[in-house]
Every structure is written in structure tokens, then in C-alpha cells.
Length: 355
Image 1 (cartoon, helix red, strand yellow):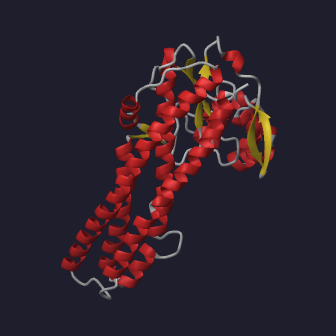
Image 2: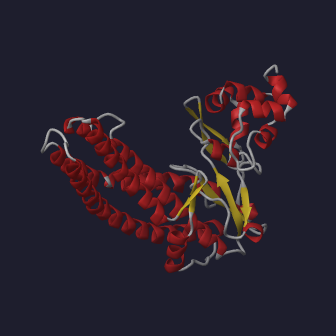
Image 3: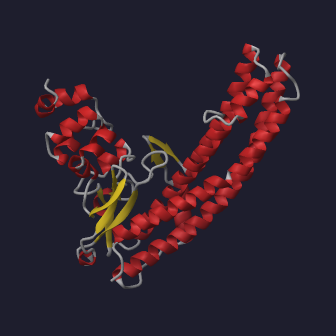
């Protein structure tokens, strides 16, 4: 029998992460070009002594970033276009293999339009693909200009500015840009795959009735995904008939590792045999039931709960069911509430902490 939708979704997400790392790495040559040119320009003089010099340097920085990042953006957009095509093929083929019959595939044009017009919501802020790329570009050049402007105001040497911008320390602009490039690539690949999956699902509503959130079961799972991965018995479920096309989907935050899996109609539900899925507890991989939710795993493994939630919240989780804790531990927007708010909200929580 073909693999389940859940197993396919997890393995595919791993492949996407690897692919996104390749795209993120592609940015390095452009960033290195920027840093080399900046270093040469700054070290042409010992200090920036006049406003005219500073303004000329800012113009140089703007032109340099526009040129180099513009080239990378073009390359990235071509990669995204190729990925959209491959994702459409993949989700159609995997669904067809699962149900053992031909399924419909939306046009490449419709998926591309949806990918670029549908916002990804990252930690409560919405971005289109173009806006997410622009955010990266703007943030990168702004950091350099702030350093140059501050150095000019404080009378710093250009060598000191170069150290902040191109140095080997983790806080240097160069290293921040490279890390952020990997995060950008991860967000874009996750978004494109998610949109393509939904488009294929909605074109096959006789087979697919919705989607379910699947989060990574380990201590690095974000609070946003901890909650989503603990709802509806193993992951929040969204149904096309009830929720339409507009519902939360990955990425849920920057550098998100969560994915979505199809919810099959009753006619095909029997194809989803009970399986296991991977988790990581105390640095060790273990297989758990495919319907295991994040909070239940944490409750069953105190070390995971303490590492992820903190000592006090781990005590509260231990005092009640995972479902009850998930209901009270977040506000209406899905954000974690404080210990004091938990204690005020629940007598059980207060008792667990001796308050």
C-alpha cells in the first residue's frame, strides 16, 4: 500500500528544508560581493569627516545593495517559479498514489497567482512573496546605513565600521544577512508548497475535505506551533466546506518547520492506516503514534516540558490534562499567557504552584 498522507507530508517537508538551505546558500556570493565592495570603499579613508562624505557613502551603499540583492532576487524568483511547478506535480502525484486513481491538477498559472497573491502570516504579520523578499532587502541595507551614520556621528574610524559590518562575529551584518537569507528561503519554500497543496486539495474536493497542521515534535517547536499541534487530537484541522481557502497555514512564523497534511473524505479515510511519526525527546529520536499531539508528548516527558515551557508551566501541565492546559495557556490570538495570568485563570494551576 502506498504511504499515508501524514508520512508523505513529513518526508516532503524534510526535502523542502534541504532545498531551502540550497536557496539560502545561493545568497552568500552576493553578500560576499557586497561586503568586499563595502570594505574597499570604507577603508579608502580613515574617517568620515563631513556630511557630504557620509551622504555619498550612503548613496554608494544603496546602489550596491540594489545591484547585488537585485540579482539574487531575480535568481530567487526563478527558483520559486520552478518550485511552484514541481510542487504542483508532487502534490498531484502523491495524492494520486495514495488513492490509487487519477486526480485533478490546477494549472501552473493559477497556483503561481495564488502563491504570489496569498499572504503568508509570520508571527501575526502578513506578507506576500514580494513583500517578504523586500523586507529582507530593506532590513539588510538599513543595518549598514545605521552603522555608517552612527560611526560618522560618533567619530568612529572606518576600520571600526568595517568590523561591525563585515567582521567574523555573529553580530556582524554579513553573518546576520546570511542567517536571514536561510530564513527567507525557508519561509518562501514553505509558503509555495503550502499554497500548491491547498490548490490541489481544493481541485479534488471529492477526495480531500481539508487540511491538518503537523508540527515537529521536539523542544525547538515554537509556542505558536506547540498550540496548533495540540488541538483537534494531534493538530489543528481546517475544512474547506467550513473554512474556505482562508485559514492559517504554514509558515506560521519565521523559519517555521510545520507543514499541513490532507484530511481525506470518509470514502478514502480507510487508506490512512494507524502509523507512527518521529519525535525527539532529550536529544533522542523516538517513534510515537501518528496522532500524538505536542502537549501530550511534553506531559509524558517532563524534561521536554521543562525545556520548552519552563519549570512553572511544566508543573501546571503535569497537574492537568494536555487538552485542558492547551485551552487555558493561550490568549484569544493564540499567544502564550504569563504564569500570573494562568494562576488567575485556573485554580488547578494556582494549586500546582502552591499559590
